[in-house]
Length: 112
Length: 112
Image (cartoon, rainbow over all chains, first blue to last red):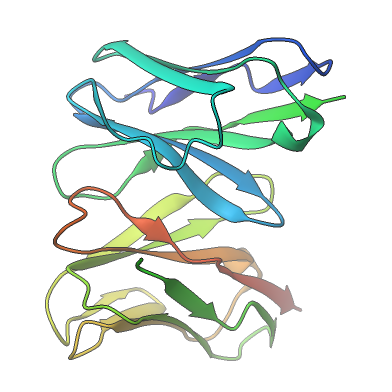
């Protein structure tokens, strides 16, 4: 199993541009999570899906952030427009029922 | 809402020494998980505890869930340089199925 696959690994973009982060969860896992990690705020849960349905998006910072999961093997997190304060490492994680999360390698986003 | 507090925030350890990191919650937890994140890496699942008073061991790592299910600890014996990283606990409650809140982590530095 290739694990949770995220792309791109690194993204540098200018303020105001749209950014799309991608995630392929582990086949058979029915829950998918998007986290953001910064030194100041640690690991923050942004949104999670269960069986492709968004369950809790209370962690999404504001309307500039949106996430979709069109099928069981793909999810996107979009930021439009991006701002420098969005700079962080964004992790996607997936899990089966009642077990530990498998995290992807993350996308390091830098907004200049 | 549920708050998960981890102490200490930083831990400097001489190689060969033991240390313990703690995870505390004000609410009763259903499950608690522990993760390790190496510098520049992603969190990696270590273990899940479910039962009151449960103790699990992985080689030099001992994990414990408190009797009241409000706290947990991770004890590492004979620390090695490979133990360097940040250790996170993540907790869920019965009304937050599948959703784990991560603590701020304990960053461990090992001195040879």
